[in-house]
Length: 626
Image (cartoon, rainbow, N blue to C red):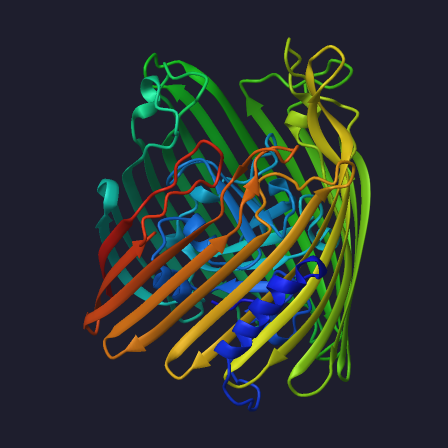
């Protein structure tokens, strides 16, 4: 796993300790730059060597996913710097992702270049994506609305599904573990002449844990989870290097959950997530590459009561999307990108959404024009970007960004960046049906932000490090609050200031690969100066892996301090530390046995107030590949 590090002023004392530990852990003699090079796409929408990217990026490869042996993406993101997660119980339960102290709705999720998620909630059920369907993940921290528009205030997470251009071959996996957990997966990918192809299926079922601490009524039972997923793709490269590909990802999940206020119910949700994408690229000239993408994503949730069979509500978002990108490469280091994006969100739900004039609202469209210029000037790189969005319902937004990186010498780089971000009000924010208790607000404006970063990076033969200070000011935050009539409505009333720092180091110590990161965040409400709820200020992660003959051994440590659970900062969850170990043993050239043990010390902790997390648990499996 390729990680990056960032840190900040309010944490000088703990940061100094973490920095000293990281340097001691990565003590090899500095040598020439490593020849290993990974490619990043999400930071600029163009392929870049990771060492040249100006944004703060973490990469999770297929090899990393196989080493981690995760049940879901919560297990993966738990090991990535700068990410804070809350979850309402065990696997499949609702989860929220906070990047560098930003709100959970301030992260844009993409699958193969397309927006995914719910237009009603304004979030993505990332916990339902199966790691077995994923080739790699790119996590880009910091505002990127000048490239991606709404939601990208805190960062962008892009998931690339498995296809014939990535890991090739056929495999069959099977595993079992705690809580009657069973997993199975199979797939194949490869190429034949100008064709490439892939197909992967996966299945996960578990009895789960008792999600809710309150055990009244039916809340005392375990909450099971089932996930089945399919990924398929086919592509063709023509003689003139034009390329055409079709990708499909479908995930079907069933998740049981608890409601504290309704212990007489046994609720469960059935979720369906789908992403289909047709993409073609054409090298018009030697310096002009044109790419057109057409597709659709679906986020569908149905909720039921297993006792009465009652329908508790359903919400479906269907997003039709078009993206046309033109990259003009004047020189190897100078690229001008001009793009047009259009998407239309259609909503079908058990709630009747209405605008201010009483008209029914079931869809809204957004179109945007994008321009980005990448310049290489000797030791200096500059990236400038601008995007203009025009939304059918909430109006227009223009966002810009500017980044500059300077190579100080052969090993050190200084980077500074500024970027604007915004998040559009959701369907729930604008049009939630009026009742005696709640009501939407059609007069809301988009949340907006200014993000600044300063980073110093070192890259050597056996190790690398990064130290980054970041700050983000977010205005017009949307907050649901009671009015004079005691009806809860959303208002643009809040503003927040987020400051922090990340320190990250990756070192190859003989056969040991050590990755360590420390993130400190002060996310405060500017009116009350209180810390924003559900964010831990300190987040420390260590991942250690090494081969040993036929063995592959690994260890992960994560430690967080306490997090407040209310806006007044009068209630909090205590800090915690968890330890996990993993091992692989190659029985035959094509057969590998795997073991993973999480929460090795059986720590009792919560990520969301009132909801349990699993204690000591394990998973044992076999993998056969050709």
